[in-house]
Image 1 (cartoon, rainbow, N blue to C red):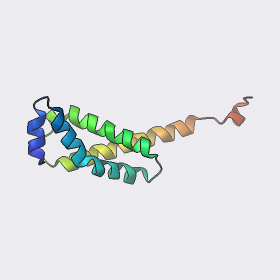
Image 2: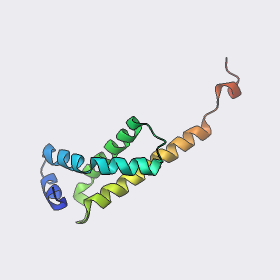
Image 3: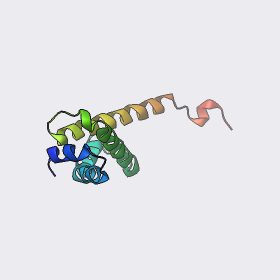
Image 4: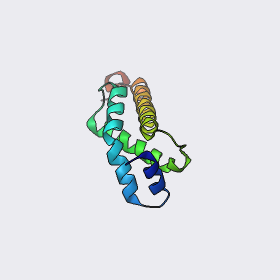
Length: 104
């Protein structure tokens, strides 16, 4: 399905157009997430990141300008993956091992 068709279908509340968008670009978005995170992510976390990408894309589809949908989804996937990477780095930085905390 071409990008202009996806945008036209998305103007109406048809779930089918969203499904087509998801299945058309799912593998691409997943590859971008894995490449951005460098393979240091579980498949569940990568899939969750991709689902978040498509949720954001669908919510903002009406504000997208005419252009390349693959590039838009790729940028959204990269940004979500970078946010996940930053969140994990911050969590690791602020996590104190039990031994150092004097527990148990």
